Image (cartoon, rainbow, N blue to C red; front, side):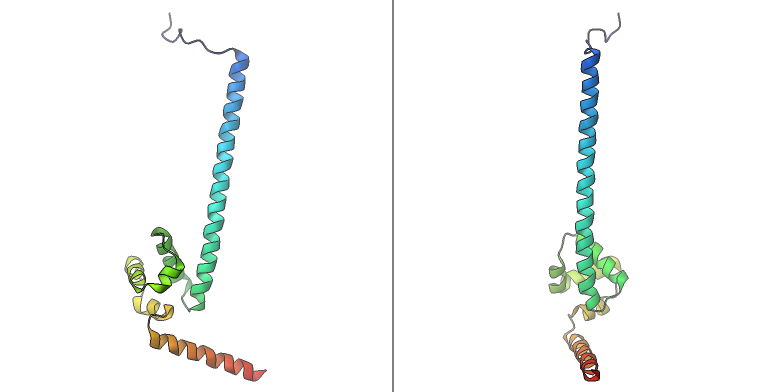
Length: 132
């Protein structure tokens, strides 16, 4: 007598429907997981585009922007919090080896540099308007 002979297997028809329902269930779960991953990718991509646009307007290069984006995603911060908190910028620069003075200057923590950048931009806009 086989040790598993006391377990009665269902008839062939029930066994087939069991396998079919199992395959349908697994494929449904797989489809849901794929949709969740696509949604997550699209939202992160949209956040990055906005983040990149805002920081590129301030004059940061692409490498620095990518590192800062990794930092805020890793620690679950927001762009507004990064722009308003100098300690977070200090922490990000330490963690990713960025030039802290340059990043702070371009993000606007150095008021004198921010004012100089604003005046340069206004001067270039004034020249552009006077040409027309």
